[in-house]
Image (cartoon, one colour):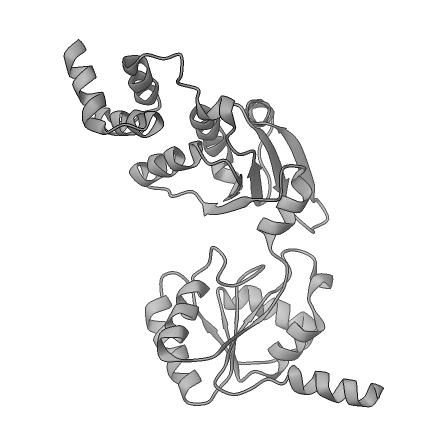
Amino acid sequence: MNDLKIRENEEKNAVLGGVLYLVGTPIGNMADISERAIKVLGEVDFIAAEDTRVSGLMLARLGIKKPLINYFEHNKKEKGDEIAARLLGGESCALVTDAGMPAISDPGADMVSLCAEKGIPVSVIPGPCAAVTALALSGLDTRKFVFEGFLPMPNKQRKEALIDIKTEKKTMIIYEAPHRLKRTLDELLANLGDRKIALCRELTKLNEEVIRTSLSGAVKLYEEKDPRGEYVLVIEGANDKTDNFWLDMSVEEHVEYYLTLGMSKNDAMKAAAKDRGVGKSEIYAQIMKKD
């Protein structure tokens, strides 16, 4: 009976030609890689990696030698078509990112979409994910959450993103690099008000650290020391108090609040209108009446 179960398991995990395998890899601790991930990486025809240097080191540690091709944000169209053509030709491919699950805040999502369009089978070998790992460590509500990935960098899109998450009631998960952390914390405090936050850095690594504090506490903390390592920010969702911060404000004060955050007058009126559940024209009319 045991031999039969082993054979059935081996057949179930067979690596097949013409299939794209999304392979989750460790986010810091190599001991977290699964037996199935090692098997797939060792048996596919080729591996597509976000950075072949990073993945090459991982494969060397595992004793695996496979052809590697780059697949990242700036070449995903060209390389995506190449990978798809090889898959349609019967080859098997493992897609890996620098760390964690490919397709999560990663151009691998475009590769999966392309495979769906072309009828190419996709299989997932689950692995570590920084977002869920941080959520579990945060001490905040885990029943409902949203993953925002990295906030946009262009000012206009960034302001719009901050407006959108201000009223989000679910726990929020955001990725951030150390050199941008102080700016992001300042903007989150200014836009969301003071909320609970867990700052999770260097997850699963030797210097793993989880700081559970408030946004104001986090801002103060990093005025005194420099951020180090990659961060996952887990932030408390809005509640009645944070959601309706404007209740005691006049329309003019409400718009002025957003102006102080660096918004244009048009965007500030749109944001105030969204908070109050009215059309922008109503806010505009009241502001113009005062002017």
